[in-house]
Length: 74
Image 1: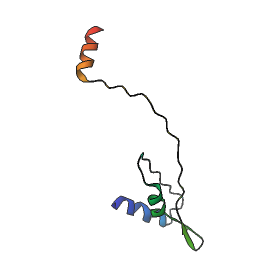
Image 2: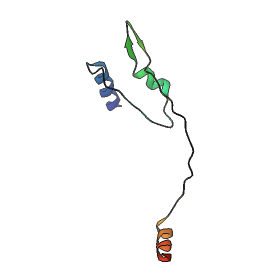
Image 3: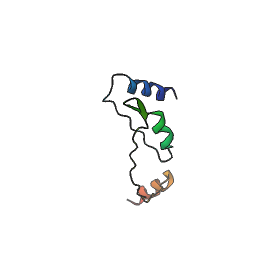
Image 4: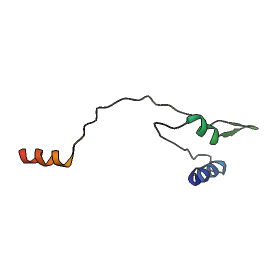
């Protein structure tokens, strides 16, 4: 929470070229967009949100015992 406050204050200072990128599979985008609102004219607009599509990848699990037995076969 403290780090988010520091980042928000940095964005409000004269650091206009600073960008914040938050990545999460479960982030509440509306809440963060409103928290990091952007001053435009005389009002605050929610920060822009960029959504990237997802792809599922096959996951293989290997355990130490499996590796030992496989190394013995080499």
